[in-house]
Image (tube, rainbow, N blue to C red):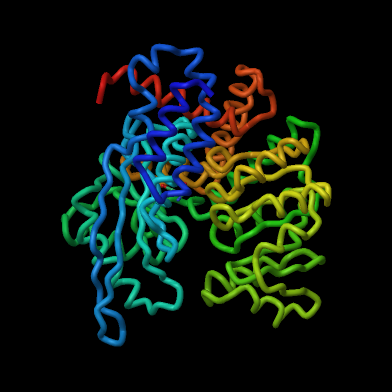
Length: 445
Ligand code: GLU
């Protein structure tokens, strides 16, 4: 790494103490970008990297609400508006107890490159709160969402910043947030994506992240002389990304044998019954262990990390950051994994990624592989601006085209920089170049 890139990374770590996830994402991204700065000295002269790693704006706020027992609760809300060089800020809202400023910054930083890779005009941002929707009543979730939006509304807008879902934020939460935005501002506009179909949502948005992941993995396999059909697949998680990844990979001829939640995983060698998983997670909002009450031949194992010991040829980590560590990677390699596609954001640790790549495993990084969600959000924004809604097949076909393009952008950039097959590096470089050129054109801002 050049002294310039090294210096920016050291300053970032010093300036953002106690934010290990942000340091991790920045280390991976900046290491990949080092050769770009060697080729483009004008970027260094323009202080481009110093500006690129610093969010344009960070908003942190109090979110008070009253629970069902009449007690006052206080959560902390965040919105990190990371980069608007190529479009309005765009990115989800995460509601999970693990949320803190460093987590939102890492997600926002990843989002900048991911959104660029989609080829659509969206900048990068991310937000959320340490509020945990798990176990809360609908009324409590609504009270939280209304309070959260009562501060957030002044920072967002259809041409300013467009939040969406992420872990803990699904259709229910987006509905409450949208209602409160409209009530405060009086504006009916595409200020959020992932909306319900009756009030401006897009068909195929719900499926998009999981479907998109499979389209990209399919293209990566095809390019390297493999196919999905006949392969055994492990999908971690059982949220929105995991469910629709499992659905599409099964439609492509893969056999999903294991899925998980934060408590443990299920193993079903007959192939996971997705209708039952949907019923448990989407309708009952239950836990994945309930699966084995109905499927007597399936097995439930407490603890979610063990899922990587299940033999498979395709692994799709779709739960959360750092869920696949070196131990998990070694188990996958020992069992002959061919491809890993990241459905979640940064689910693989740096050590695990290195081990997989060294073992010759095809590795699709999240910012490329899971970009289908935000890409379809951008398609939702287009439909809202046009005041039209497209058919499922129209959106799905556009999504597939975008994912195939993203794979080839990453593949080509990796080849151009002498690292063929290194899609981590390729995705980082391809995503960065568009943002860098826009920033250069717009002067020191
Ligand atoms: N939270 C998703 C992501 O990580 C989707 C964001 C969006 O649709 O704006 O990309």
